[in-house]
Image (tube, rainbow, N blue to C red; front, side, top):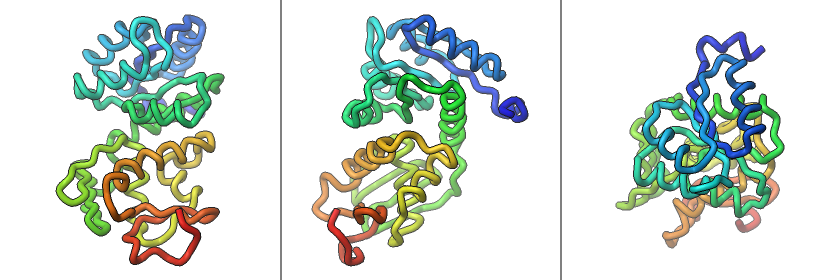
Amino acid sequence: MLHNHAMNSSLKILVVEDNPDLAANLVDFLESHGHAVCAAGDGPTGLRLASSGDHDVIILDLVLPGLDGISLCQRLRREFGCRTPILMLTARDSIEDKITGLEAGGDDYVVKPFVLREVEARLKALVRRAAGDSPSQRLQVADLVFDTANYLINRGETVIELPPIPAKLLEALMRASPRVLSREDLERAVWGDAPPDSDALRAHLHILRNGIDKPYDQALLHTLRGVGWKLCPATMEADGPPA
């Protein structure tokens, strides 16, 4: 079924993975689905190819010889200004490791062992989001402003930098404000009908909360346990369990 829309969704993909069998599996599967794939087996080669190529999306293993995936991702984002979406591959299944990868600049992750079809679906979703399919609009809740046309987020005079998925969650919450969005609402807004494991939303919300609330006296993101999340000034917060 994936071949039916391969014509308009063929991607240029870079795979940075040091396990030759896993790399070969990824390359073979993705090429058989019409994508153009190149591969690197170590961190320095991956950094060189990622910083100089025009890939649509990057698959990045976290454990690499020469330069680990976290450091590679940080350098791509900070030194090279690379905005190419990055899907991280990790054998680590703790929430802290996932948050570390996302804070380094990764856009999404899959935990090994994974299903190849899921990897392809996540790559396509990342590229769709990077292309910017949201309506141009200036969103504002209290002193938090999100210019979705230019991808600029400010709280007061401070510019806030968020990775793409926390930013997508912020956009959904701001558009709904002050209504509550459930876990299902937020997962659908970001991942459509293919949500990842249960930790993913928590990890991205953690990054979002750190970005928009941690340095400020007034929290805007509120958790209603067992119900969902809402974005609004504290004065508008409905009676409910504390976050």
